[in-house]
Length: 437
Image (cartoon, rainbow, N blue to C red; front, side, top):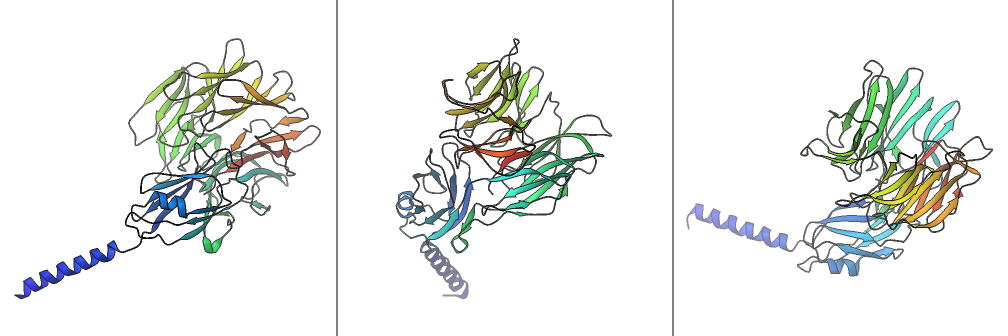
């Protein structure tokens, strides 16, 4: 054989050898992400180097404590979904093990997984206010310097940072606080690590008259703002990956990004409209009537609206794709805030008597509009402008309440199993959840 033929044959043998080596290479776990779930408290997304045998993963993988769960997907990627109606009380120890479709075993991996959000609070400090975080070990950690006043706080939905606005004599300033955190730790680092804050940076250089903030689970940030020199409202959009964009939208009130991304809800004079974000085809869907967006449900496309009637009554409505709004409640009380579990199977409504702000009640309502449980909040005052928040991992609500006769408000946890009040001994002006990274 001549030399070119020998080289060609050697190359073919080398390629065949490499192919055989690759075929014998065991599968690898390439990506592991913790994410929110619409039908359960939390989920994991897994991507492998080879198509996997899902049944073997389900049989060989372990959770400690042994929480009911299921594996979803065909071969790759796969999803581990915790079953609904089970609160998560601590970090979950996870062993991932199984075989691929060739019968080769995945090298077992151990992880610590803690999908619970952390408690974030605006705390009185000296003559001003400070943003603080409750770590897993019970310590309160200062995240920002002391501001004269913190007027708005919105965690980015992916847990990568916190957008906030502060006010002094010169006006409002808009800031972004980067965070380092992860709900997952490798087996050699069992236990949840502390959240680490990066340097605070200004998002806009000029002092502002007002700001309204919104974020989604992707970590995008939407800001409605007006500078003293401009006098008009501007809408700025910071995508998680990309540069700031200005949106040519004129709303009659606060806009909200959809949790799963790609669109926003915008109040207009004619009603509420759904608009696509830049990068997607233009779309405008209008729901007419005098309505306010109150809160989103975990299932995509579900939300709670408050409708205002000509006789000054208000109603709570559940909206679902392709369906007319479903009325869940109608009354003369003021609606303070709402929260929603999954697709609206359970809804919590915080109302106050319009003549007596101290007569507040927390109602639990099912999809059929029946009140299944009530908690009277006599002796407590709801901190104005602070919404109710729901934690599906621990199945509890978070309210910021002020006990009558006390100068400071405090965070109050409310397990949804019985709506019992569990106050925390921490003076705050606002309490909210920080999503896990």
